Length: 228
Image (tube, rainbow, N blue to C red; front, top):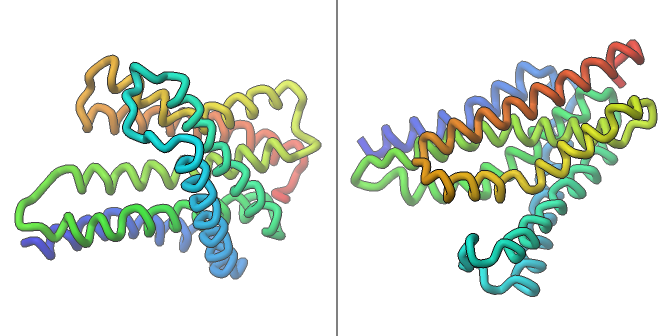
């Protein structure tokens, strides 16, 4: 039973990643090693974030309600993820949709392997069933959408042919992406919502962000007449 539960969790996490890579057409562009490259930059970025947090914010267990400014500064470190994704996109040649998908999938896959693999191997194989591992699996799928949306926003922000009226919206979405986890944690503490409701809220916010991003991207793609 424990191995069956572990197998279900692994399939629930990694199968959507595999299907996204396979049916997005990235295999036709030989994007496998570019995804590996994105994963390497992800690991370097997380190492830099850990060093910054350990150096300037050693008290990682401080209460959010008593130290809003400290939590805000810690969330500011997450901007490093956007910078890392920017460097990933800069190193990927090709059309726009292949660039953002390669960067997003590679980044998200590295995150899910480093943050979920050991957790599932140690926890999901336990003697007792626990819903929290299923929740972690759904959360990983939500993060896949978020990382692809983040990569698309960075690509849009770097375009010189993006309408000036859309530039503030893209910038605001990028800033919101960096501070989204802090905002959601604050909502969870204030409203005292449970883990399943929090997961639904996170999925809703991510889908809205992704939908707005897709709308802006589609408009730009139609205006230039080609995905590049």
